[in-house]
Image 1 (tube, rainbow, N blue to C red):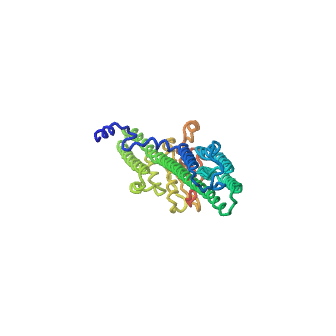
Image 2 (cartoon, one colour):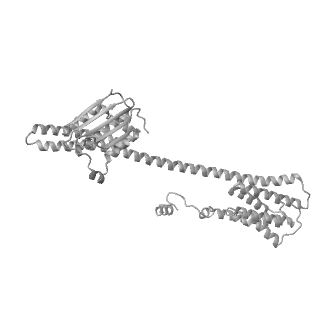
Image 3 (cartoon, rainbow, N blue to C red):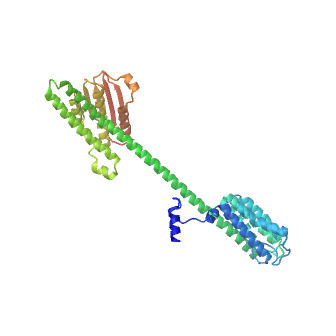
Length: 419
């Protein structure tokens, strides 16, 4: 036997490996229709056996304790009508209750021996209370109470209040159990729906956070790496032009290229930190640049061959970190555009500290904006500047300067609150 079992296990399909086989009867009776059919068949058999053996049943049927009429084909038919419709009780609860109630009323009116078939009437009422709202189940319960009252009134024995209360207790218990199950099932459905909705919202929030993180990385890559690469390209071009006549200056340009390349690597490592865990970020992220780093930034642009004049107006004072970084990035992007598109031009950077606003102005005396170029190429740098300004509820003006060239003017509130 052990050898046989091991051989079977070795050839078992992956779906059934590691788990005992499930009997076919469990699959069969897992279906609601088969369960209800089984209940109907068992109740029918018990009712017929009880009538034949004269099993006394004290359930909601009128009449005396002795049979006034022997069981015949009509009686068997009425018993079947009280029990067999239960096979469809979940599909059509109200029609099944109607059929069983009428059959019970006729069975009692004709004076047949009391039987277990009356339980079909109670099961049908329980099903209506379970699968239908109260606007349907309450009138159904009242109708069932009226049927029981008529059965007791038309019975041979006189109506007694205790008997009526006992019968109504049966009805009330069946209705209450069904209604309680309906409420409990509804609560489970609500909890499942809420859990599904929360999970969906969590996924949407995660997707939005990922998209926002990607936008931050893309903007930082453009602001930092594009600026450094632009300066490196300009320095390399200058070194190539003067290498034959001024090797010393060419060597200095190569040193500047090395310096800018190292800074670009540092910035790249910092940006890659955005893709790590929060713990790794705190350990690896380098300090964010700000307005205090303008001299270094202007020096890099000067080394690229663009004369830049930096002017600070007003009293410099600390500004919120987010505003400080955004102001630096706006100036950096504007200078990068000058290096890339306004070769040989002069540039001016003005930072003005007002009472409530920080004013930025970056201008050059080059040829000005190229309309054809602007119409055929997306301005990702301009988009990044507009996003940074809009983040703080500021204003941005980009275009031709009053005396030619190109000008970027930004106005940011000094409170640093994001909109």
